[in-house]
Image (tube, rainbow, N blue to C red; front, side):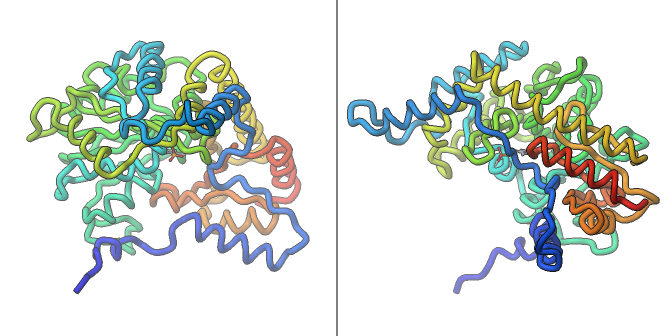
Length: 409
Ligand SMILES: *Cc1c(COP(=O)(O)O)cnc(C)c1O
């Protein structure tokens, strides 16, 4: 008799994006002739850089000939790409070994899977608000007794509340925790932690033998000085941090699919032997994963240097210009906004303290603009909405015009 994994029942129903889609569909049915402007989901919209396309086309042609065809590659990623990632880090002053870098089909799966390296009774801390994957993967793995309806939080998880008062920088946990998820620059708040602010977490983690899971998917959006692009820029991080990153926002690979994770050899937790966690992740990937697409890997290689890198920078600059237009557009009508400088996300405070879903409905009804209600990322987001810069420029301009002309606050 098979029985289900009941931890899945602990997941709260109504995942954020399906609920948004349901509301938008229902509105569109009632307003069939109106155009919806989507600044909700963080999905890239602009063409892939040309140099990256050419590299992938070349690989496809090689696959079409017997002499140059290749099948499975290494589960950890092709050697030339891992070497290029080591080189990419080196330019930022970080030295890594090739066997510390694991190529994957994207950061989301790695962010969800990485918790399997740690015991089921690990206490998990997440920033509030947070990218839902960190929370849901731990709940589905059995680290929570379930959803607390009153608090709007999962039981047993530790929420690090990011508010206007602390500049949306997560405070250190006030108790001992085992795993800490940090996303820097942050999705959804657009805030970015400085070296000093990240260092406080590293000091905490080393003192408590905790492990930091650091998501740097938006590192290429850092435009100002003083912010780390990798956690390994900070001394001591290799003993306590895993870094997860992606080509999705870096060079428009949301559909192509490619990411990587760094598990340093010197990473340790309370009861691990030296190198054990690095070997465990290697074992996990070689057992559960058969490697990223060889076409995508050629594309990723092209994105890391030369023309492909320059063109990716142009792509990032395009989205950051959208972010500036959104930030300034919302400020002009009197909203309080954060983020949007070292990040493609603007974290806008709802007017008059209204709830984020109420403001979502209002923006949809009055302006035909879709945003993401902050409450979907955690209770600290209840009076904010996330506005995404991932759209065509003309849609961003139209959305700002619609908001300026039609929003009644
Ligand atoms: C978009 C995003 C990613 C990227 O995920 P992929 O699976 O690589 O597309 C990772 N982390 C965060 C916080 C993101 O917003």
